Amino acid sequence: MELHLDFIEDKVEFFEAGELSKLEVAVQEKIEQNQALLLRVHHVSHQVNIDPSSGKRIYSAIVHFRYKG
Image (cartoon, rainbow, N blue to C red; front, side, top):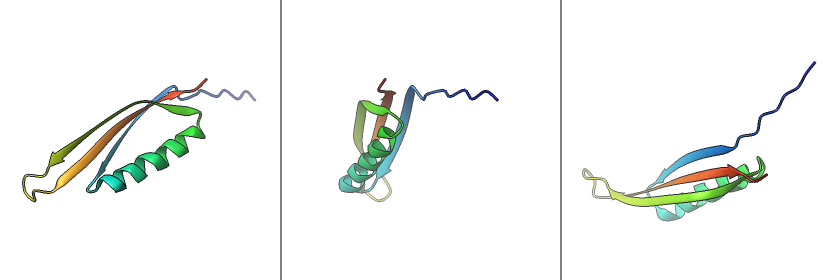
């Protein structure tokens, strides 16, 4: 039996929250999970939008992870 493992080299994840603190917690949890997969943060992009129907802010982030090796 042959076992062949492929590493994840690049991974992009998207996050969205109604509060900035919740967005930060979600991103930090995912960073810790991806460290176990030997992925580190390569780039982070974030922005704030206003929901036209409710007038509330929507915080979003995109995190690009890359293999550490």
